[in-house]
Each structure stands twice: as C-alpha cells, then as structure tokens.
Image (cartoon, rainbow, N blue to C red; front, side, top):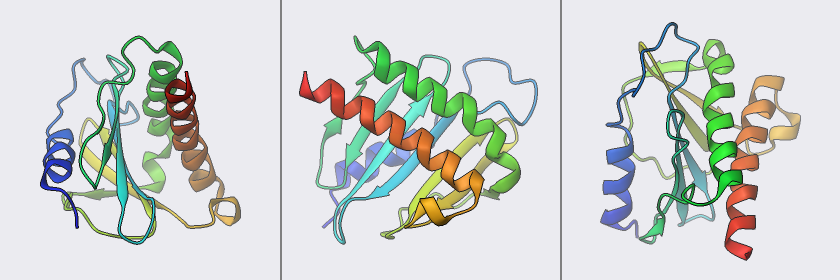
Length: 152
C-alpha cells in the first residue's frame, strides 16, 4: 500500500518553480526520480539545482527530507545530477503526466524552462544506450552519497 504522505510529497515536488532565470532548455533546475525498491515499495529522489536540495521519499511513508543540509557531498551530488541532466533533454520526452506509476523501471523527470521531460532507465542500465547509462550513473551517485551520510 502506497502511503498518502508519500504521494503528497511526490506531488509537491512537481510544483517546484525555477529560482533563477533559465537561458535555454538545457538548464535543468530540478529532477524527480521514481525508484523501484521491490514489487510493492518505491522511493522518490527529489533534487534542485539552485539550492542543491536533496530529499528521498519512501512509499511506506516518511523519508529523508533536506538531507543536503549539513552534508556537502549529498548537496554536491544532487546539484551535479541537475546540472548534468540538462545534456539529456534531447533523449527525453516532454510530458504533463506526473501521476505515480508502480513500475519496476526507474523513471526520471527533468525540469527545464519549457516544461518537464521524462526518461526511463532500463532495469539493466549497463546494457542500455549511453544517455541512460549516464543518467543512471548520476542518480546512483546521489544515492551513494545519501547512504554514506546515513552511515555516519
């Protein structure tokens, strides 16, 4: 069962607006990534560029909110995900459907000046095309820094 708090936090992430003027469509100001953890459990990673905000929401409820606070490595990884994701817009599809889908693939949403674009990372990213490998690398980098911060 998906916790309503999770869905609320996830939905609120899609309301974010850019905090700085964007010069082109390759400047990504936020990224939302839906991650399958098991058949029934999911997490959503939310990162913003301007303040290097990073949160991780769990479908069972709760999560790690604002984990960039006091953790420079998590903040840097989240900012890097947003900064670098702009290069991937040409491989993504524009969307206006942000509804939660209980899928076993990782879905990334990239926020740019003219809207939100989406890409799905295949289950086996190492066998995927380079853009999907790159996106997976960026996401895994943030998750690794979050894990390291939780082990301290």
